[in-house]
View 1 (tube, rainbow, N blue to C red):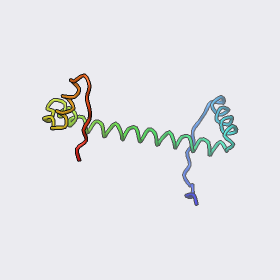
View 2: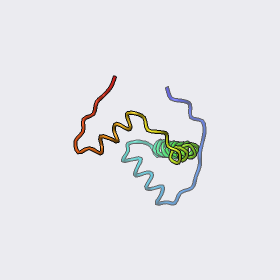
View 3: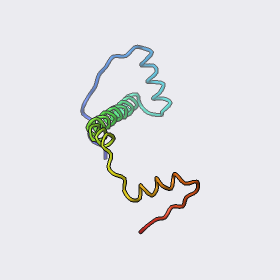
View 4: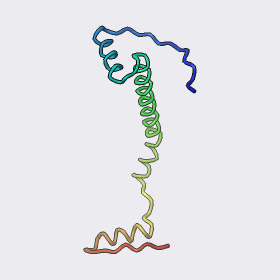
Amino acid sequence: MSALKKERVEFRLSESEKSALEEAALLSNTTVSKFVSETTVARAQEVISERKRLQIQEKQWDSVMEALENPADPTELMQEIIGMSLEETWTVKIKN
């Protein structure tokens, strides 16, 4: 069961914009109202999601820069991999 729709949004369009929406709705086999509602809400969710992702990245920037400027000492496995990469041929050993 879908939620009761009681909110309303009004906006003005040029004649060509309205025609484009009507044609797109017709091609999508839906009403203009449903077409506009679905496409604008989907786009709004994309914008919100992208902004939240960017905010998270901004918050993590300092910790990323800190890690790049002060890298941790290589582990035993990392040293082994670095050593193997310097050899002409190498075999990976997986330790349990």
